[in-house]
Amino acid sequence: MTRLRRRLRAVLLALPLLGAAPHSGHDDASPAVQAMQDDDAENPGLLWVQQGAALWDQGCASCHGAPGSMRGVSARHPQFDPALGRPITLAGRVNQCRARTGEAAWTPDSEEMLSVTALVGRQSRGLPVAIDGSGAAQAALEQGRALFTERQGQLNLSCAQCHDDLAGQRLGGARIPQGQPNGYPLYRLEWQGLGSLDRRLRNCLTGVRAEPLPPGSPEMAALQFYLGWRSNGLRVETPAVRP
Amino acid sequence: MRVLLNVPKTAKKGEAVEIKILISHPMESGQRRDEMGQVVPRMVIHDFVCTYNGAEVIRLALFPAIAANPFLAFSARAEDSGAFTFTWADDSGASQTETALIVVE
Image (cartoon, rainbow over all chains, first blue to last red; front, top):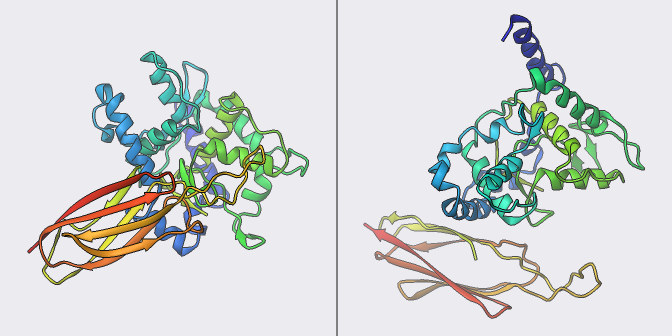
């Protein structure tokens, strides 16, 4: 890596720090919800982790060994894949593996995909998110940033208008979170179940009455990549609990 | 059904132990309608019993106002080594039993 690229990378990594420091949605939740996430006996996300461990033993374990070998993986995802020329999410990686072994892909919201990504994500719990947005990944990062700051939908709002500019303030009774993705897949009390970041983004986009991004589209990957990079430094909380 | 069961492995005689159980269940209230406007049938765990070496510790009647994936926590006094048995039944007629062992010193 040349000195210039290294310097550029240092600048890019420091960029989120120039705005408000990343702040986890965990800290905006009520004490009861925080306690639910922090106690493994009480966190319903662990039910999916348990299911994921059963699926892991049936397939993944023959190559990857114990789930502990996945420590750190979810902290690096979504990751820019030079071979594909675009970012790939953790769920995308799981499906790459399934394609390699001749198995049918799982949809992002299937119980199987949620369970396995929850299991893999949990192995990185407590590690800082470290998504590399340097070099060839910059174009995707810019695409994601453009999606984040672009006004859209009938309400003509961009993500940034609330989650950058107004984060920490109140919308009705709820505190506006920064929209950090460091706990996905997570258990939402509103959903009464575990859900993916895809599902969360669909909710956001229909909320501003915009057309949701198609699942598996390059735009979806770019937006998730930007969101991940924006959360650099926050601890992985998978499976988190949110209201 | 997936279950997260939390019973201390060991306890001192006479000590109060906290028992936590989280059951994976939709707890469908019977009040909601699906996309076609049809009522989604009620499907809740309605009965839960915990026994300790055969003696009943707690018996619960659960109702549709309880959220999905119910979390139950209660205490019992550790007297003898043995087993806590948890049995519950839902509206589909299915019932499930889980057991946790405890050693009392």
